[in-house]
Image (tube, rainbow, N blue to C red; front, side, top):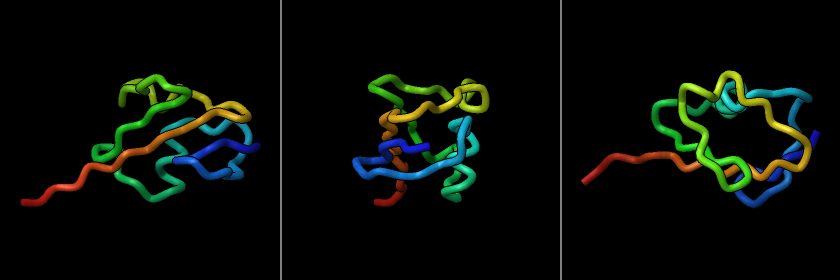
Length: 66
């Protein structure tokens, strides 16, 4: 199925959860904020939150530094 990920079309497997998407992208769940269709998905809900066709997903990684 297709989703929009950070402004670009991306093909993903059907019934993928947000947590699985992060694993596929090799992103650390602790360092990523996830928004789907304008709503924040909290870490506790990521394993159960299933993405659907045409969902708009925004991932923001947190970067430390000084």
